[in-house]
Image (tube, rainbow, N blue to C red; front, side):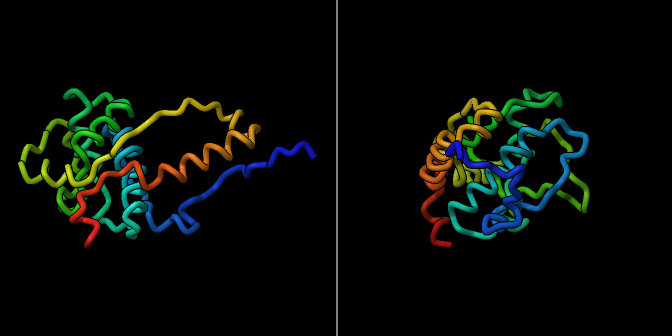
Length: 173
């Protein structure tokens, strides 16, 4: 034995104990908002709800269009994840209960409107990232370097509750 553990081909976190923190699978449609969907709708919803230990519902899922309209420079040509994380750090995210993604069953495809209401900006500031970091990891390195993967898992465990900033009043709800 070489001492290197064999990692599974894939892992479905939606089917284990973490599944309750993921939002429903949804579709960005023909808007170039994939970064906001990946970082805001999926990852931020999962991270925030897990840190609050609350089951994800349609109401407490975070709206990707809130993020996308602020980081796309007024054009529908996509965006970059570092801008999404920077926005989530400084401005925060809005839950669907405050700013619904669907109106009369139709997805909001408006990629220009900034939704300037004071209420929206105040509520978004309740849910922010405390910090974020990027890791440049080679997939093959992760597959073969068990020690690195183990350290990476340890770092994720240490960081999972430290990287979300939540208005303290919300923790009581």
